[in-house]
Amino acid sequence: MHRLKHEGPERVLVHLCRLCLHCSDPEVRKKLQYLSLRRSQMLYPSYQAAG
Image (cartoon, rainbow, N blue to C red):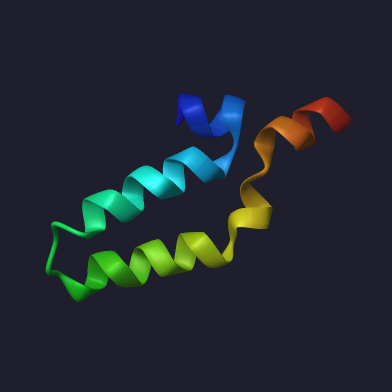
């Protein structure tokens, strides 16, 4: 949460993607895809800077 809030979604999504490589549950992959598609909605540092 801290990294997402202060750095944005890129690094968080990379780490989640790496974790998914070790998980065979299709629901986990589905949730990662959901988050990846909403990357532009998680640009919290930009939103904070804009007020």
